[in-house]
Image (cartoon, rainbow, N blue to C red):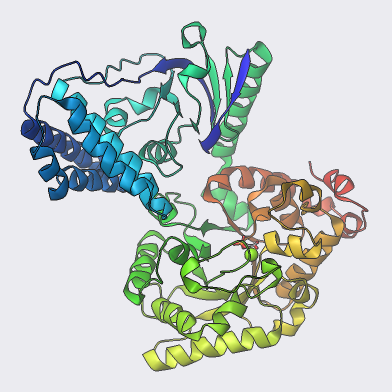
Length: 539
Ligand code: PEP
Ligand code: MG
Protein backbone atom coordinates (compact mmCIF):
# COMPACT_ATOMS: atom_id res chain seq x y z
CA UNK A 1 0.00 0.00 0.00
CA UNK A 2 1.20 3.53 -0.80
CA UNK A 3 -0.44 6.90 -0.21
CA UNK A 4 0.14 9.82 -2.60
CA UNK A 5 -0.91 13.36 -1.75
CA UNK A 6 -2.63 15.61 -4.29
CA UNK A 7 -5.18 18.41 -3.99
CA UNK A 8 -8.77 17.34 -3.37
CA UNK A 9 -11.12 19.47 -5.50
CA UNK A 10 -14.34 17.46 -5.65
CA UNK A 11 -15.29 15.69 -2.40
CA UNK A 12 -16.19 12.03 -1.84
CA UNK A 13 -14.41 8.71 -1.37
CA UNK A 14 -14.45 5.76 -3.79
CA UNK A 15 -12.57 2.61 -4.68
CA UNK A 16 -11.81 1.63 -8.27
CA UNK A 17 -9.42 0.21 -10.80
CA UNK A 18 -6.97 2.84 -12.07
CA UNK A 19 -7.19 3.45 -15.82
CA UNK A 20 -4.92 5.73 -17.78
CA UNK A 21 -6.70 7.46 -20.66
CA UNK A 22 -3.92 9.86 -21.53
CA UNK A 23 -3.37 10.17 -25.28
CA UNK A 24 0.02 11.57 -26.15
CA UNK A 25 0.53 13.80 -29.12
CA UNK A 26 2.49 12.13 -31.88
CA UNK A 27 3.15 14.54 -34.75
CA UNK A 28 4.53 11.76 -36.95
CA UNK A 29 0.97 10.46 -37.46
CA UNK A 30 -0.33 12.17 -40.61
CA UNK A 31 -3.63 14.02 -40.90
CA UNK A 32 -6.49 12.19 -42.63
CA UNK A 33 -8.54 15.34 -43.30
CA UNK A 34 -7.78 18.99 -44.16
CA UNK A 35 -7.34 21.64 -41.47
CA UNK A 36 -10.59 23.29 -42.52
CA UNK A 37 -12.48 20.01 -42.27
CA UNK A 38 -10.83 19.35 -38.90
CA UNK A 39 -12.04 22.67 -37.46
CA UNK A 40 -15.55 22.03 -38.80
CA UNK A 41 -15.60 18.49 -37.44
CA UNK A 42 -14.40 19.53 -33.97
CA UNK A 43 -16.87 22.45 -33.89
CA UNK A 44 -19.69 20.04 -34.80
CA UNK A 45 -18.55 17.65 -32.07
CA UNK A 46 -18.62 20.44 -29.49
CA UNK A 47 -22.07 21.50 -30.69
CA UNK A 48 -23.46 18.01 -30.29
CA UNK A 49 -22.00 17.79 -26.77
CA UNK A 50 -23.57 21.19 -25.96
CA UNK A 51 -26.97 19.85 -27.04
CA UNK A 52 -26.49 16.83 -24.81
CA UNK A 53 -25.53 19.06 -21.89
CA UNK A 54 -28.41 21.47 -22.42
CA UNK A 55 -30.93 18.66 -22.44
CA UNK A 56 -29.65 17.44 -19.08
CA UNK A 57 -29.41 20.82 -17.27
CA UNK A 58 -25.60 20.91 -17.42
CA UNK A 59 -25.54 24.60 -18.36
CA UNK A 60 -22.11 25.36 -16.92
CA UNK A 61 -20.41 22.67 -18.98
CA UNK A 62 -22.35 23.83 -22.04
CA UNK A 63 -21.11 27.38 -21.47
CA UNK A 64 -17.49 26.17 -21.34
CA UNK A 65 -17.95 24.48 -24.71
CA UNK A 66 -19.62 27.56 -26.23
CA UNK A 67 -16.41 29.39 -25.33
CA UNK A 68 -14.36 26.57 -26.92
CA UNK A 69 -16.24 27.04 -30.20
CA UNK A 70 -15.54 30.78 -30.12
CA UNK A 71 -11.84 30.20 -29.50
CA UNK A 72 -11.56 27.54 -32.21
CA UNK A 73 -13.25 29.77 -34.79
CA UNK A 74 -11.62 33.02 -33.73
CA UNK A 75 -10.57 34.89 -36.88
CA UNK A 76 -7.12 35.82 -35.54
CA UNK A 77 -6.42 32.18 -34.82
CA UNK A 78 -7.80 30.82 -38.10
CA UNK A 79 -5.84 33.50 -40.03
CA UNK A 80 -2.60 32.42 -38.36
CA UNK A 81 -3.43 28.78 -39.08
CA UNK A 82 -4.22 29.44 -42.77
CA UNK A 83 -0.68 30.73 -43.33
CA UNK A 84 0.82 27.37 -42.32
CA UNK A 85 1.69 24.22 -44.16
CA UNK A 86 -1.31 22.04 -43.25
CA UNK A 87 0.74 18.87 -43.23
CA UNK A 88 2.93 20.16 -40.44
CA UNK A 89 0.81 19.31 -37.40
CA UNK A 90 3.46 20.46 -34.96
CA UNK A 91 3.30 23.98 -36.42
CA UNK A 92 -0.49 23.97 -36.08
CA UNK A 93 -0.23 22.95 -32.44
CA UNK A 94 2.43 25.63 -31.83
CA UNK A 95 -0.07 28.35 -32.80
CA UNK A 96 -2.31 27.20 -29.95
CA UNK A 97 0.64 27.05 -27.56
CA UNK A 98 1.61 30.63 -28.45
CA UNK A 99 -1.95 31.87 -27.83
CA UNK A 100 -2.09 29.93 -24.61
CA UNK A 101 1.17 31.52 -23.46
CA UNK A 102 -0.33 35.02 -23.96
CA UNK A 103 -3.20 34.13 -21.62
CA UNK A 104 -0.85 32.48 -19.12
CA UNK A 105 1.03 35.77 -18.71
CA UNK A 106 -2.12 37.72 -17.81
CA UNK A 107 -2.56 38.78 -14.20
CA UNK A 108 -6.15 37.67 -13.96
CA UNK A 109 -6.53 34.10 -12.67
CA UNK A 110 -9.58 33.57 -14.88
CA UNK A 111 -7.56 34.18 -18.05
CA UNK A 112 -4.66 32.10 -16.76
CA UNK A 113 -7.01 29.14 -16.48
CA UNK A 114 -8.37 29.78 -20.00
CA UNK A 115 -4.81 29.28 -21.27
CA UNK A 116 -5.20 25.59 -20.35
CA UNK A 117 -8.41 25.49 -22.38
CA UNK A 118 -6.63 26.83 -25.48
CA UNK A 119 -3.99 24.13 -25.19
CA UNK A 120 -6.70 21.49 -24.76
CA UNK A 121 -8.48 22.70 -27.92
CA UNK A 122 -5.19 22.57 -29.85
CA UNK A 123 -4.69 18.98 -28.75
CA UNK A 124 -8.24 18.02 -29.67
CA UNK A 125 -7.78 19.53 -33.12
CA UNK A 126 -4.62 17.49 -33.76
CA UNK A 127 -6.35 14.28 -32.62
CA UNK A 128 -9.35 15.11 -34.84
CA UNK A 129 -7.07 15.67 -37.84
CA UNK A 130 -5.38 12.34 -37.15
CA UNK A 131 -8.73 10.59 -36.57
CA UNK A 132 -7.70 9.44 -33.09
CA UNK A 133 -10.54 9.08 -30.65
CA UNK A 134 -10.57 8.10 -27.03
CA UNK A 135 -11.02 4.41 -26.26
CA UNK A 136 -13.04 3.92 -23.15
CA UNK A 137 -14.84 0.76 -22.34
CA UNK A 138 -15.71 0.64 -18.69
CA UNK A 139 -17.61 -2.24 -17.29
CA UNK A 140 -15.90 -2.14 -13.89
CA UNK A 141 -15.68 0.79 -11.49
CA UNK A 142 -12.77 2.88 -12.68
CA UNK A 143 -10.69 5.76 -11.46
CA UNK A 144 -9.62 7.73 -14.52
CA UNK A 145 -6.08 9.09 -14.73
CA UNK A 146 -5.03 11.71 -17.25
CA UNK A 147 -2.58 14.52 -17.63
CA UNK A 148 -5.54 16.73 -18.40
CA UNK A 149 -9.13 15.98 -19.37
CA UNK A 150 -10.73 17.75 -22.30
CA UNK A 151 -14.52 18.15 -22.69
CA UNK A 152 -14.39 15.73 -25.58
CA UNK A 153 -12.86 13.13 -23.34
CA UNK A 154 -15.26 13.60 -20.44
CA UNK A 155 -18.20 13.47 -22.82
CA UNK A 156 -16.99 10.15 -24.31
CA UNK A 157 -16.89 8.53 -20.89
CA UNK A 158 -19.85 6.86 -19.24
CA UNK A 159 -19.71 8.98 -16.11
CA UNK A 160 -22.05 6.65 -14.23
CA UNK A 161 -19.23 4.11 -14.09
CA UNK A 162 -16.51 6.54 -13.13
CA UNK A 163 -15.44 6.40 -9.50
CA UNK A 164 -12.96 9.24 -9.65
CA UNK A 165 -10.74 11.52 -11.69
CA UNK A 166 -7.05 12.02 -10.99
CA UNK A 167 -5.78 14.85 -13.19
CA UNK A 168 -2.21 16.05 -13.28
CA UNK A 169 -2.79 19.50 -14.78
CA UNK A 170 -5.65 21.93 -14.30
CA UNK A 171 -7.02 24.44 -11.86
CA UNK A 172 -9.97 24.17 -9.52
CA UNK A 173 -12.30 25.73 -12.10
CA UNK A 174 -11.12 23.68 -15.08
CA UNK A 175 -13.66 21.76 -17.11
CA UNK A 176 -12.86 18.35 -15.59
CA UNK A 177 -13.39 19.67 -12.07
CA UNK A 178 -16.74 21.24 -12.95
CA UNK A 179 -17.89 17.92 -14.44
CA UNK A 180 -16.65 16.02 -11.39
CA UNK A 181 -18.46 18.31 -8.97
CA UNK A 182 -21.70 18.24 -10.94
CA UNK A 183 -21.69 14.45 -10.96
CA UNK A 184 -20.52 14.09 -7.38
CA UNK A 185 -17.39 12.29 -8.61
CA UNK A 186 -14.32 12.65 -6.34
CA UNK A 187 -11.46 14.43 -8.08
CA UNK A 188 -7.81 15.02 -7.18
CA UNK A 189 -5.41 17.34 -8.99
CA UNK A 190 -1.63 17.17 -9.08
CA UNK A 191 -0.94 13.41 -9.22
CA UNK A 192 0.23 11.72 -12.39
CA UNK A 193 0.60 8.09 -13.46
CA UNK A 194 4.33 8.72 -13.54
CA UNK A 195 4.17 8.96 -9.73
CA UNK A 196 3.45 5.21 -9.33
CA UNK A 197 3.47 1.93 -11.21
CA UNK A 198 -0.04 1.84 -12.68
CA UNK A 199 0.43 -1.63 -14.20
CA UNK A 200 0.85 -3.13 -10.75
CA UNK A 201 -1.91 -1.06 -9.17
CA UNK A 202 -4.95 -3.33 -8.90
CA UNK A 203 -7.10 -0.89 -6.98
CA UNK A 204 -6.93 2.64 -5.62
CA UNK A 205 -8.89 4.63 -3.06
CA UNK A 206 -9.53 8.18 -4.16
CA UNK A 207 -10.40 10.71 -1.47
CA UNK A 208 -11.52 13.92 -3.17
CA UNK A 209 -11.87 15.73 0.16
CA UNK A 210 -8.37 15.17 1.55
CA UNK A 211 -6.59 14.76 -1.80
CA UNK A 212 -5.19 11.35 -0.77
CA UNK A 213 -4.77 8.58 -3.31
CA UNK A 214 -4.15 5.14 -1.77
CA UNK A 215 -2.56 2.63 -4.15
CA UNK A 216 -3.37 -1.06 -3.49
CA UNK A 217 -5.09 -0.31 -0.17
CA UNK A 218 -5.00 -2.81 2.71
CA UNK A 219 -8.06 -4.36 4.34
CA UNK A 220 -8.39 -1.75 7.07
CA UNK A 221 -8.31 1.18 4.59
CA UNK A 222 -11.01 -0.52 2.52
CA UNK A 223 -13.08 -1.02 5.68
CA UNK A 224 -12.86 2.72 6.43
CA UNK A 225 -14.23 3.45 2.93
CA UNK A 226 -17.07 0.96 3.45
CA UNK A 227 -18.02 2.56 6.77
CA UNK A 228 -17.81 6.03 5.26
CA UNK A 229 -20.16 5.02 2.46
CA UNK A 230 -22.66 3.51 4.87
CA UNK A 231 -22.67 6.76 6.86
CA UNK A 232 -23.21 8.83 3.72
CA UNK A 233 -26.10 6.59 2.61
CA UNK A 234 -27.73 6.92 6.02
CA UNK A 235 -27.31 10.69 5.98
CA UNK A 236 -28.91 10.94 2.56
CA UNK A 237 -31.82 8.80 3.72
CA UNK A 238 -32.49 11.09 6.66
CA UNK A 239 -32.27 14.24 4.53
CA UNK A 240 -36.02 14.72 3.98
CA UNK A 241 -38.63 17.47 4.20
CA UNK A 242 -40.30 15.50 6.94
CA UNK A 243 -37.17 15.52 9.10
CA UNK A 244 -36.68 19.25 8.58
CA UNK A 245 -40.23 19.74 9.86
CA UNK A 246 -39.66 17.37 12.75
CA UNK A 247 -36.58 19.37 13.74
CA UNK A 248 -38.41 22.67 13.23
CA UNK A 249 -35.49 24.06 11.25
CA UNK A 250 -34.88 26.00 8.07
CA UNK A 251 -31.76 25.42 5.99
CA UNK A 252 -30.36 28.21 3.82
CA UNK A 253 -27.43 28.19 1.42
CA UNK A 254 -24.16 30.08 1.67
CA UNK A 255 -23.29 31.33 -1.81
CA UNK A 256 -19.90 32.74 -2.73
CA UNK A 257 -19.48 32.42 -6.50
CA UNK A 258 -21.39 32.46 -9.78
CA UNK A 259 -20.61 28.76 -10.25
CA UNK A 260 -22.21 28.00 -6.90
CA UNK A 261 -25.40 29.75 -8.03
CA UNK A 262 -25.48 27.98 -11.37
CA UNK A 263 -24.69 24.50 -10.10
CA UNK A 264 -26.93 24.70 -7.04
CA UNK A 265 -29.50 21.93 -6.89
CA UNK A 266 -31.09 21.00 -3.61
CA UNK A 267 -34.85 20.93 -3.49
CA UNK A 268 -34.91 21.18 0.31
CA UNK A 269 -33.02 24.49 0.39
CA UNK A 270 -35.07 27.33 -1.02
CA UNK A 271 -33.27 30.34 0.46
CA UNK A 272 -29.88 31.95 0.56
CA UNK A 273 -28.73 32.73 4.10
CA UNK A 274 -25.48 34.41 3.11
CA UNK A 275 -24.77 35.89 -0.29
CA UNK A 276 -21.07 36.81 -0.11
CA UNK A 277 -21.42 39.61 -2.65
CA UNK A 278 -17.73 40.54 -2.60
CA UNK A 279 -16.95 37.76 -5.10
CA UNK A 280 -18.70 39.92 -7.73
CA UNK A 281 -16.00 42.54 -7.11
CA UNK A 282 -13.01 40.27 -6.46
CA UNK A 283 -13.49 38.33 -9.72
CA UNK A 284 -13.27 41.54 -11.80
CA UNK A 285 -10.31 43.71 -12.71
CA UNK A 286 -12.41 46.91 -12.60
CA UNK A 287 -15.37 47.94 -10.49
CA UNK A 288 -18.47 46.08 -11.77
CA UNK A 289 -21.14 48.23 -13.41
CA UNK A 290 -24.66 48.52 -12.06
CA UNK A 291 -26.06 46.42 -14.95
CA UNK A 292 -23.78 43.50 -14.34
CA UNK A 293 -24.60 43.54 -10.61
CA UNK A 294 -28.31 43.56 -11.45
CA UNK A 295 -27.82 40.60 -13.82
CA UNK A 296 -26.13 38.58 -11.09
CA UNK A 297 -28.99 39.33 -8.72
CA UNK A 298 -31.52 38.26 -11.32
CA UNK A 299 -29.67 34.97 -11.76
CA UNK A 300 -29.83 34.46 -8.00
CA UNK A 301 -33.53 35.20 -8.11
CA UNK A 302 -34.14 32.47 -10.69
CA UNK A 303 -32.48 29.80 -8.54
CA UNK A 304 -33.93 30.60 -5.14
CA UNK A 305 -37.62 30.78 -4.47
CA UNK A 306 -37.57 32.29 -1.00
CA UNK A 307 -35.54 34.68 1.20
CA UNK A 308 -32.20 35.95 -0.09
CA UNK A 309 -29.97 37.41 2.61
CA UNK A 310 -27.69 39.70 0.63
CA UNK A 311 -24.56 40.71 2.49
CA UNK A 312 -23.21 44.03 1.31
CA UNK A 313 -19.55 44.21 0.36
CA UNK A 314 -17.21 42.67 2.91
CA UNK A 315 -13.91 43.80 1.44
CA UNK A 316 -10.82 44.20 3.58
CA UNK A 317 -9.17 41.73 5.94
CA UNK A 318 -8.25 38.69 3.82
CA UNK A 319 -10.35 39.93 0.87
CA UNK A 320 -8.49 42.54 -1.18
CA UNK A 321 -9.47 44.24 -4.45
CA UNK A 322 -6.61 45.86 -6.38
CA UNK A 323 -8.62 48.45 -8.31
CA UNK A 324 -9.98 50.03 -5.12
CA UNK A 325 -6.43 51.10 -4.23
CA UNK A 326 -7.02 50.56 -0.54
CA UNK A 327 -4.31 51.79 1.79
CA UNK A 328 -1.96 49.15 3.20
CA UNK A 329 -2.84 48.39 6.81
CA UNK A 330 -0.70 46.67 9.36
CA UNK A 331 -3.68 44.80 10.80
CA UNK A 332 -6.21 44.54 7.96
CA UNK A 333 -8.58 42.33 9.98
CA UNK A 334 -8.82 45.16 12.50
CA UNK A 335 -8.88 47.86 9.86
CA UNK A 336 -11.26 49.45 7.42
CA UNK A 337 -13.24 46.40 6.29
CA UNK A 338 -16.87 45.46 5.72
CA UNK A 339 -19.38 48.20 6.50
CA UNK A 340 -16.59 50.56 7.59
CA UNK A 341 -15.20 50.45 4.07
CA UNK A 342 -18.51 50.88 2.28
CA UNK A 343 -19.43 53.82 4.49
CA UNK A 344 -16.18 55.46 3.42
CA UNK A 345 -16.86 54.68 -0.27
CA UNK A 346 -20.41 55.97 -0.67
CA UNK A 347 -20.59 55.72 -4.45
CA UNK A 348 -19.54 52.05 -4.35
CA UNK A 349 -22.03 51.36 -1.56
CA UNK A 350 -24.91 53.23 -3.20
CA UNK A 351 -24.35 51.43 -6.51
CA UNK A 352 -24.51 48.09 -4.74
CA UNK A 353 -27.68 49.02 -2.83
CA UNK A 354 -29.24 50.28 -6.10
CA UNK A 355 -28.42 46.96 -7.77
CA UNK A 356 -30.24 45.12 -5.00
CA UNK A 357 -33.32 47.35 -4.97
CA UNK A 358 -33.51 47.56 -8.76
CA UNK A 359 -33.28 43.83 -9.47
CA UNK A 360 -35.77 40.96 -9.32
CA UNK A 361 -34.65 39.92 -5.85
CA UNK A 362 -36.37 42.97 -4.39
CA UNK A 363 -39.41 41.49 -2.68
CA UNK A 364 -37.60 38.60 -1.10
CA UNK A 365 -34.23 40.16 -0.31
CA UNK A 366 -32.97 41.03 3.15
CA UNK A 367 -29.98 43.34 3.30
CA UNK A 368 -27.25 42.48 5.78
CA UNK A 369 -24.23 44.56 6.79
CA UNK A 370 -20.93 42.86 7.71
CA UNK A 371 -18.53 43.87 10.49
CA UNK A 372 -20.95 46.10 12.36
CA UNK A 373 -19.39 47.03 15.71
CA UNK A 374 -21.66 49.81 17.01
CA UNK A 375 -25.27 50.88 16.72
CA UNK A 376 -24.07 53.96 14.82
CA UNK A 377 -22.44 51.75 12.16
CA UNK A 378 -25.81 50.14 11.60
CA UNK A 379 -27.82 53.37 11.65
CA UNK A 380 -25.49 55.06 9.18
CA UNK A 381 -25.58 52.12 6.77
CA UNK A 382 -29.36 51.83 7.10
CA UNK A 383 -29.66 55.51 6.17
CA UNK A 384 -27.86 54.79 2.90
CA UNK A 385 -30.45 52.11 2.06
CA UNK A 386 -33.28 54.50 2.94
CA UNK A 387 -31.91 57.28 0.76
CA UNK A 388 -31.28 55.00 -2.25
CA UNK A 389 -34.76 53.46 -1.85
CA UNK A 390 -36.21 56.96 -1.73
CA UNK A 391 -34.42 57.95 -4.95
CA UNK A 392 -35.57 54.79 -6.73
CA UNK A 393 -39.04 54.82 -5.23
CA UNK A 394 -38.47 51.23 -4.03
CA UNK A 395 -39.87 49.43 -1.04
CA UNK A 396 -37.48 49.11 1.87
CA UNK A 397 -36.49 45.50 2.52
CA UNK A 398 -35.76 43.95 5.91
CA UNK A 399 -32.35 45.09 7.14
CA UNK A 400 -30.11 43.25 9.58
CA UNK A 401 -26.55 42.67 10.66
CA UNK A 402 -23.91 40.01 10.91
CA UNK A 403 -22.96 39.41 14.49
CA UNK A 404 -19.23 38.93 14.15
CA UNK A 405 -17.64 41.47 16.46
CA UNK A 406 -17.55 40.78 20.22
CA UNK A 407 -19.05 44.23 20.95
CA UNK A 408 -22.31 43.18 19.25
CA UNK A 409 -22.22 39.61 20.59
CA UNK A 410 -21.90 40.82 24.18
CA UNK A 411 -24.76 43.32 23.92
CA UNK A 412 -27.12 42.35 21.09
CA UNK A 413 -29.96 43.99 23.06
CA UNK A 414 -28.58 47.38 21.97
CA UNK A 415 -29.78 46.55 18.45
CA UNK A 416 -33.13 44.89 19.03
CA UNK A 417 -35.26 47.99 18.46
CA UNK A 418 -33.57 48.70 15.14
CA UNK A 419 -32.60 45.49 13.36
CA UNK A 420 -34.89 43.07 11.55
CA UNK A 421 -32.57 40.10 11.97
CA UNK A 422 -29.22 38.83 13.23
CA UNK A 423 -26.96 36.39 11.42
CA UNK A 424 -24.00 35.15 13.43
CA UNK A 425 -20.68 35.06 11.60
CA UNK A 426 -18.88 32.52 13.74
CA UNK A 427 -15.71 32.61 11.61
CA UNK A 428 -14.88 36.20 12.42
CA UNK A 429 -16.49 36.16 15.84
CA UNK A 430 -14.14 33.32 16.81
CA UNK A 431 -11.02 35.06 15.54
CA UNK A 432 -11.89 38.30 17.30
CA UNK A 433 -12.95 36.58 20.53
CA UNK A 434 -9.76 34.54 20.84
CA UNK A 435 -7.46 37.09 19.19
CA UNK A 436 -6.39 34.38 16.74
CA UNK A 437 -6.10 35.14 13.02
CA UNK A 438 -8.49 32.75 11.19
CA UNK A 439 -5.94 32.23 8.40
CA UNK A 440 -3.14 30.87 10.59
CA UNK A 441 -3.39 27.09 10.74
CA UNK A 442 -1.00 26.76 13.66
CA UNK A 443 -3.52 28.71 15.76
CA UNK A 444 -6.25 26.12 15.11
CA UNK A 445 -6.52 25.22 18.79
CA UNK A 446 -7.99 28.72 19.29
CA UNK A 447 -10.51 28.25 16.48
CA UNK A 448 -12.65 25.76 18.37
CA UNK A 449 -16.26 26.96 18.36
CA UNK A 450 -17.17 24.53 21.15
CA UNK A 451 -15.12 26.47 23.67
CA UNK A 452 -17.56 27.25 26.52
CA UNK A 453 -16.74 30.95 26.56
CA UNK A 454 -17.67 31.14 22.88
CA UNK A 455 -20.84 29.11 23.47
CA UNK A 456 -21.81 31.65 26.16
CA UNK A 457 -21.58 34.43 23.60
CA UNK A 458 -23.68 32.45 21.13
CA UNK A 459 -26.22 31.58 23.79
CA UNK A 460 -26.54 35.24 24.66
CA UNK A 461 -27.23 36.27 21.07
CA UNK A 462 -29.64 33.41 20.32
CA UNK A 463 -31.55 33.95 23.56
CA UNK A 464 -31.80 37.71 23.14
CA UNK A 465 -33.08 37.29 19.60
CA UNK A 466 -35.56 34.52 20.45
CA UNK A 467 -36.93 36.39 23.47
CA UNK A 468 -37.46 39.50 21.36
CA UNK A 469 -38.90 37.68 18.37
CA UNK A 470 -36.06 38.68 16.10
CA UNK A 471 -34.90 36.26 13.42
CA UNK A 472 -31.52 34.75 14.21
CA UNK A 473 -29.41 32.43 12.08
CA UNK A 474 -25.79 31.29 11.91
CA UNK A 475 -24.01 31.69 8.59
CA UNK A 476 -20.44 31.02 9.75
CA UNK A 477 -18.82 27.63 9.21
CA UNK A 478 -19.99 26.38 12.60
CA UNK A 479 -23.41 25.76 11.01
CA UNK A 480 -21.79 23.49 8.39
CA UNK A 481 -19.96 21.44 11.00
CA UNK A 482 -21.74 18.44 12.54
CA UNK A 483 -20.62 19.09 16.13
CA UNK A 484 -21.01 22.85 15.81
CA UNK A 485 -24.54 22.61 14.38
CA UNK A 486 -25.47 20.07 17.08
CA UNK A 487 -24.51 22.52 19.80
CA UNK A 488 -26.23 25.44 18.05
CA UNK A 489 -29.45 23.42 17.94
CA UNK A 490 -29.12 22.67 21.64
CA UNK A 491 -28.66 26.41 22.26
CA UNK A 492 -31.95 27.12 20.49
CA UNK A 493 -30.89 28.00 16.93
CA UNK A 494 -33.32 26.98 14.20
CA UNK A 495 -32.04 28.69 11.03
CA UNK A 496 -28.80 27.27 9.65
CA UNK A 497 -27.09 28.86 6.68
CA UNK A 498 -24.54 26.41 5.40
CA UNK A 499 -22.48 24.96 2.57
CA UNK A 500 -25.24 23.06 0.71
CA UNK A 501 -23.09 19.91 0.33
CA UNK A 502 -23.06 19.56 4.14
CA UNK A 503 -26.84 19.64 4.58
CA UNK A 504 -27.46 15.85 4.83
CA UNK A 505 -24.69 15.42 7.44
CA UNK A 506 -26.06 18.35 9.47
CA UNK A 507 -29.62 17.03 9.46
CA UNK A 508 -28.39 13.61 10.71
CA UNK A 509 -26.49 15.31 13.48
CA UNK A 510 -29.45 17.49 14.50
CA UNK A 511 -31.72 14.44 14.66
CA UNK A 512 -29.37 13.09 17.33
CA UNK A 513 -29.41 16.43 19.16
CA UNK A 514 -33.21 16.43 19.14
CA UNK A 515 -33.27 13.04 20.85
CA UNK A 516 -31.38 14.37 23.87
CA UNK A 517 -32.80 17.89 23.89
CA UNK A 518 -35.26 17.32 26.75
CA UNK A 519 -32.63 15.93 29.07
CA UNK A 520 -29.86 18.36 28.30
CA UNK A 521 -28.86 21.02 30.80
CA UNK A 522 -27.53 24.08 28.96
CA UNK A 523 -26.18 25.63 32.15
CA UNK A 524 -24.10 22.53 32.75
CA UNK A 525 -22.63 22.73 29.21
CA UNK A 526 -21.84 26.41 29.59
CA UNK A 527 -20.11 25.84 32.91
CA UNK A 528 -17.52 23.46 31.42
CA UNK A 529 -13.90 24.58 31.41
CA UNK A 530 -12.91 23.64 27.86
CA UNK A 531 -14.20 22.31 24.53
CA UNK A 532 -13.01 18.75 25.26
CA UNK A 533 -15.43 18.47 28.12
CA UNK A 534 -18.19 20.17 26.09
CA UNK A 535 -17.71 17.45 23.43
CA UNK A 536 -18.73 14.80 25.98
CA UNK A 537 -22.28 16.17 25.76
CA UNK A 538 -22.48 15.32 22.05
CA UNK A 539 -23.73 11.81 21.29
C1 PEP B 1 -18.14 34.78 9.22
O1 PEP B 1 -17.31 35.62 9.55
O2 PEP B 1 -18.52 33.83 9.96
C2 PEP B 1 -18.77 34.83 7.90
C3 PEP B 1 -19.76 34.03 7.56
O3 PEP B 1 -18.26 35.71 7.00
P1 PEP B 1 -16.91 35.47 6.17
O4 PEP B 1 -16.46 34.06 6.44
O5 PEP B 1 -17.28 35.71 4.74
O6 PEP B 1 -16.02 36.50 6.74
MG1 MG C 1 -17.07 37.45 8.45
